[in-house]
Length: 419
Ligand code: GTP
Ligand code: MG
Image (cartoon, rainbow, N blue to C red; front, top):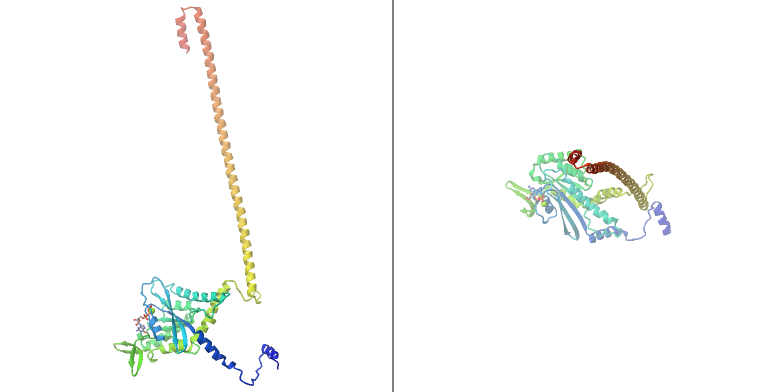
């Protein structure tokens, strides 16, 4: 059969054909292994738990090393996240390990918003990855992926039940990260109480709808893992073992009869590390990416459920934007016209008021003028009357002087009376 025929058939439905000899693609898994080893791996753990619950000690115990880190005080005003990255090497495999730990979790009187900085941190790592993915020149193979692959949630060994802070926080985190609850410092709790405590926690998680990480290899019996952390070593038999020593005896961290530490290490690191990475990418990141792109207006299908390409989405968005811009422009124009009309009316009103004032003042002025004119006229009349009387008096006087001096005295008297 010709190669083109085989290619055509591959598109229509595969047909198994025997190979006459060795071709070499059976080395593909090895090629993948080699490629992965040369690239190295990265794994990011988030430890959420109240101050002093043994987060740092457990990390040291899990990775058999001493990571630096100062204990937190109980006086933090809010919850913070502290992130440290380490390069680890085991055989020929390199691992870039990031440990993020909550600082001040559970120390505030009002714990309502304690989960918020944690959610924001997880989202920020998703956002950074999404931004890298959306770049034209992507460098994803070199990119330091800081997305959280596993969140160890430390439950206090109260033997009682979960605190509402635990339930609220785990509920807020369960759609964003693989939540693995662990009972911290489980040496503080007796064996029978521990069994009851585990059942109680599991039922509370179920009844509150908290979706914890499901290990592909079922290990429900141990969940949540009861852990003990310690880096102190003691020779027992001919072996050095990690222990916590008490006046009444010794707890061995790696003894499965004492706690679930070994089980957790197996499930977290040796068996499911890749699944945790895979779940982070295909489930949690995918959900974040989908919500974010939908929020930005991207869709895979149009309202009639027909495929909608990126180009079409872009054009639809652009048209929508231009339409909105035009609408805004029209609104602004209308507003401007309205403002001008209002200002015009205001000015007209002011002009009218000025005219009225002017008329009022004019009338006042005319009245005043008329009053003054009337007064002047009456004064003129008075002056004229005075003048007439004066002329008459003078005439009388001249006539008197002609009539004789004897009567002068009398006339003077009359004149006095006259004035
Ligand atoms: P912060 O970072 O300050 O919030 O504390 P942490 O959660 O990192 O706790 P850390 O590991 O510093 O441990 C606090 C104390 O608890 C130390 O004295 C540890 O020795 C002790 N501790 C740690 N793990 C365990 C444990 O499994 N059992 C008991 N009994 N004590 C433990
Ligand atoms: Mg610590």
